[in-house]
Image 1 (cartoon, rainbow, N blue to C red):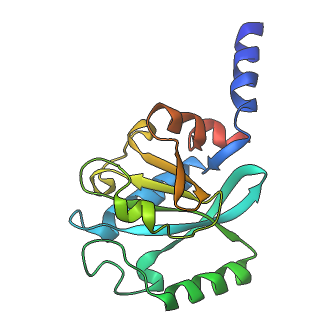
Image 2: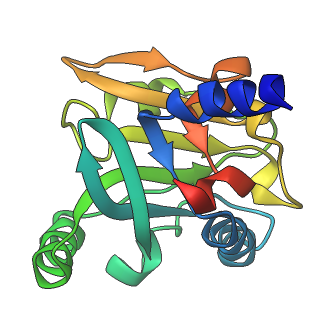
Length: 176
């Protein structure tokens, strides 16, 4: 029994960096991305929440097409300047900040050149999550593209096996 408690305590103590979702929020977000993308074009959302040190806590999401009705018109996510003014206004009203963004891709969840060179929020520490297959079903965490912006168009890649240690969206996230 002691070994189990020690192992669990170690695992939970490593969750002081990255991005955390309550599991039900994560599942609802994926379902809504699937619905909005109609399984044929990209869809996305800004993740609103709080940041304490290197840990971001997601408390709400604002979908791109709520800010810009034309966001998905080209098939990829494109937002115009007025969408960002509305986003910052929402953040002020809710007392939250943008801690990340999430969008879908057809096929695998790789960071495209456009994603890499045009971050949705070019602020150090911003997290960009890419969901494969237009978010159909419930993609495993290890299949997601998870990228942390470091400034000057540089990113840290937390995808694959690293995503499991950086993106906290499981049962234990309810207790942290």
